Image (tube, rainbow, N blue to C red):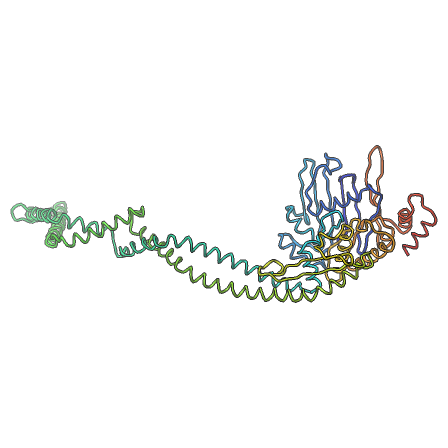
Length: 550
């Protein structure tokens, strides 16, 4: 419920603050006094788009702030869904800055207008005869039936199942689309993978292959070169080893004479040992090397395959080719494994569909049982409101399509007079009839559901006499379970209020401003007497006002 409203620099309002209480609060005032301004400020607070033209003084900031006590309304989930911190005592503030920019705050946290608009319906329901009534909405009609049927828990269960079903359906569609695209590439990826796999890359060493190829391809030249090297090192007549050994003998004769000669001998001896080792290895290598055309062909084949694959995939090493091979293998396996995923998801989807259908069938059954109760209560409520022949028909049928509130479709038919055919509510009900139907719906809902604060804007238009008394009684009864604000011109309804606020205008220094005043008991008597007989209040009007209040 709303506990406080503060309005500053809006339309004809300079700065007002008013407290609201539980029960039925009556708001009265002469035509043009500013009742519509109050509704406009409330609408702005609840997310209506701001208009700089509605600001009283465009050089100053316009501020509208409302305090709400929502501890017992079960709204925590609404705050969580909209990324807001829940507070049992919530403050909403709208600001219109001099430049025309608008800002919104929930508990001093800046919020987007969409967040505020999502929260608004759970706080205040403003009902005006001149606006499109939600009573003609199929979703609203279903909400009313669900409230009577006690479907809250069942509906939440269905919505959770439907959310899972929708999520798995979307996932399945995505994987099928992925498979469709993957199949187009599967053959090519499989070919590339097989080509790399056949090359047996993990067993190839490109450097070794290239060295082997060069050795076999130049075997004769290598053999000749190694033979000459061996000759130059170890041949009896000209070999370096022989000359070095003779030099070592000569140094051996004098090495005892000086440390220097000893060093020369040691160094030459080491060189001879190294030359002998080289000579032996060169000779051994020369014996191993021989022309092998078949092996040369095989090595060349492997290298050419390797070079082609590297060129094809724009890489230069075997390790890069192996990495590509692994990636292709993963792609091929993923594509081939999509069928298993699709089969698994199809099974899960079918199971979820069956579960969700079962829950929606339970919803349908409970709704079907609740419809006769709602029909009876609505018709009984409308009887004293001047619609004694009002009748409703609820055509509830199950469809094959899941919706957020089940699989049911609903058409509400209405007739206000005997002998006339039923027709869709929005087509056959007049404005006055629609207002009374909405009042009846809200009155029935109040018995079964914790409703937000309801503001009725002249719901009594076109009503008088005994019907006005009956309407006042319904409003008073509703206010025992919910907070009601009713803007009215009827004294019968005004007298039923638990609280009374008067809106009036004042002229001061060539400036007209709108004000609010909470009336005490004596002021209420005078206000209701003026509603009965005009500004010139008679004793009879005072007496009549007291009688109405009592």
